[in-house]
Length: 294
Length: 296
Image (cartoon, rainbow over all chains, first blue to last red; front, side, top):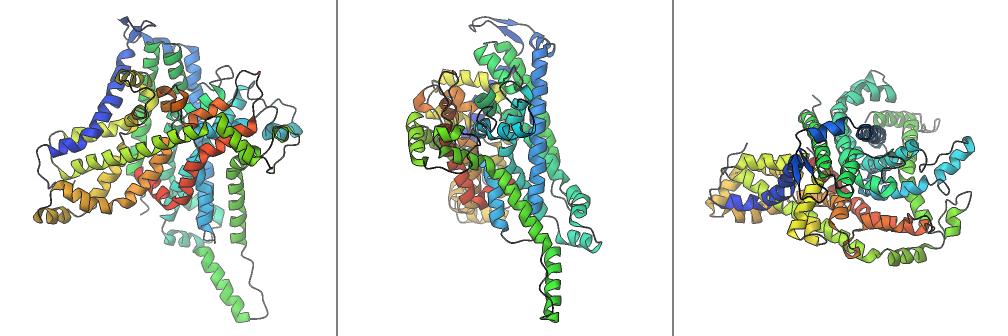
């Protein structure tokens, strides 16, 4: 850490004040409130609170419906992550070859990052539309299966995964391009001398070298998919059909604001907090070891 | 470099043999071009399709086989969607929200990073760790209680309610901290010898050096603010305060009695996604820098 030079009794406090005020009022205070709510039973009008210990958690952990939202969340986040990271690695691998027009190609690959997951969801909603969508139309030539997301849970899940993965792509591609460009030319030339073809060179040399970035992106994509996906669910499926796309953040909101079950919603928030802590620690552990090609 | 090397060697070889042999076709580059074009086609298709639908009338939207080419109803569809969904107001709300959040985050992060790097004060490390912990408290894990706080403050349906609670930023603070740490300590000492106070040093020395970081962060944070869903969804319930990302859903009828006007919905979607996408395209250099560096 750098030696500090300025001496002033009150100025540093004034400088950190805005950040600290927002942090305490809108982050720490509500988070502590959620922790507190998680061990109480609150009457629907919020006028009576009874301490119940871990009863809210116990109830959640034995609730098959909650268990289903946990599975949905991991299927959703896992699906989004696998698709968005794999496609991004392939695209970035192509966009770092020595060919002409790279700048244009890169721009054309990055822009989906700007699309809100909810807006992407609405576009995919029409692509998947049972009556007018282009995807069910083409699928109807090869199968008689009713590819209808309003009826089939897995189709609805595929819809929201595809839409969300689409919006993650630009982000992952930008990271992989930066990582691939950082690989020393000498390493790849050595492989070339050894007579490795492009695919072999990619699997044997490039892939292990970017694996720290891959782990980092996996953690980050999981966090995004877990915590920034309320929009796509709310705008497209509202958790349906039959709860097939109800993910944990959506249920926490629904039980809290619509069901007015504040205790359970608080306990769900605490469980979500534990997940985000694990993922963030993982992400920073990997970040420390990132970009070491020596 | 390897492919280029091989090509150059081939060019030299063909040059020596002069008229006898043509320059060999570069298969490697051709395959890469073809694969990249198909990648881009897949990535761009949903947007292309949304645009195409937004230019058709309802009859063309539902025709079988689907029409994959633009039609002539672009202007009337966009005008109608604009009217029907109160687009003008929603776009203004989104712009106000995105710009205020970006500027606010950058400003308060610059100030706190400056305090943390250039001062030695009691509670410095506590501040640092508290800022770090905000990373682990995304909106959904504290939504109910934050909603209560906003209600108590009387900030529901206000711009301050939409923006101020989202202004704390660990990533921006860390980015500025990293950047300040790369500036040689002698600079601050020299400024001090010249009699410049800390604020003078920040304003006339650090700030001019920070523009690249500020631009990069602005692009990323603008997109973050524009694309917020859960927050405006909770904090606003009047038409006048709705942002475009949440308002779009209002174009989709859920009752079943009303026929969905998919061409208008797609026109709305295109209008909602155009500003952030345009910013990425036109400020691509800053965007990549902001994305890659702010996450380190």
